[in-house]
Image 1 (tube, one colour):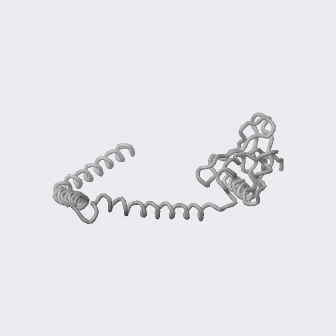
Image 2: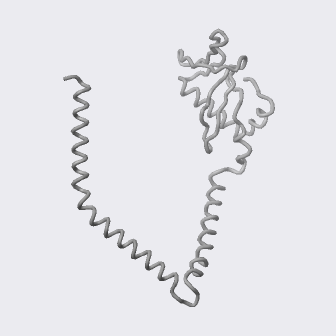
Image 3: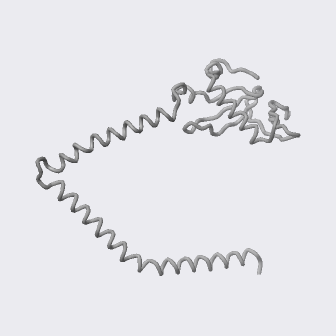
Length: 190
């Protein structure tokens, strides 16, 4: 019997055992689910009765009176949380429009997902073709296949993931120091 057949039989046995356990548990759990749903329904009926009962004010007015401060408190909390999580110097319209720059001899483009960089990719400054990476002796070279495989960028220190991390760190540095504002107007070559 080959390996694929053994794996297929094993998976079938595991599925059958799990299905048997589920079928054994479902009838005993049914009673608990029915009790919970009855309890939940009684809670809904109690809430309805409380809302339509007569107090000094009808229940629905009390509900509205307490709902506004709760929503106000939630709004204040979320406003404070957003103010703390996003520094003042980095407003959304500022740095999120920064999606292209020239670094390490190549043009880098990316997009923002929240506050994180995603889809970071490098392009040839000469023909705008996508560059491919080549790891060689502790450095990553970025080659252009359209320009006779010529090296367009080199980042020393590690493999492709190190190089991408170095570019992300440089983007972060340029945002912190506001250098990116100059790069948006005139791309600079390193």
